[in-house]
Length: 334
Ligand code: NDP
Image 1 (cartoon, rainbow, N blue to C red):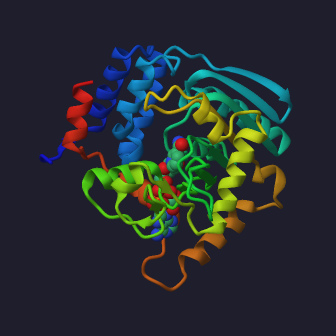
Image 2 (cartoon, rainbow, N blue to C red):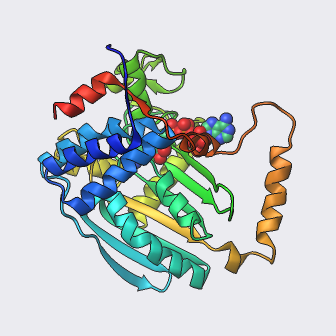
């Protein structure tokens, strides 16, 4: 592996934008996705930054991703919004729906957005942070292609099925939790395989159904496992039901049957929930929660931190970001 290179955040944006435009995306979609990629690199979510660009490009070139999608939004009830993403990128759908979702939650206390036919291969914190920017709690989940075997099985059936949650803290950083229900996100396993690191026991099985710490054996014909045994299994099942059963989209195993196998992200659904503490809580919810967070942060122990803090800390730096040189070569050759 050759030495890594350093790119400024603007260079990361420009590189992604140029490659997406060359692959047929229009300026609207290319600029939204390039911003998502830049923000992932800015926050140190490297498995969802430039690392994902080749797969997006594959699916733009294969015609699976609609390069000029303009998602269509309809209000089903005052607190339920449906978005048909038109086989386009999830971040483009978010840009349209989150302001509407926020208005509905601020009026009704609670609002749901059911996003159909979208391509979601990014981290989920951008959408829940955007919901929290409206002073709302946000919950998001999405399914994917089957990569994860339910507890007791050796065949993949669930996506890595992430769940993200943000709690608004006006004037401060929101508290944001964003995690795969797999023991490790597939992107992280791919990065470990690329960089030659072992993964912890319990991350996945090899092609013969045996536990392995070798990420290459998980990526090549193996399966991931849910985190925390039956508990992660239950949450992953919940994500399938919210993002497919509830919103009339495909379950991860059905998505695989429909996918054209171009190596890029599939087309599926996303569930978004917004809750207004202003409407639902007793008075002084902010002070009440701040006191709670203060008690939490004051607990004894030297490694305690709030979820999301690592990313917010990374965000403060304007320094160029280190990019894997092999990845950069792959992208430049695209
Ligand atoms: P991690 O295990 O790295 O982190 C999960 C969460 O735990 C983060 O919110 C993180 O906050 C928090 N956290 C980590 N360590 C601590 C700690 N010591 N104390 C408090 N909080 C902590 O994430 P995953 O590997 O599970 O997922 C990575 C990404 O992959 C996610 O962004 C997810 O959305 C994405 N993904 C996307 C998929 C898709 O289909 N679009 C599929 C699967 C995953 P912090 O960020 O501050 O470290």
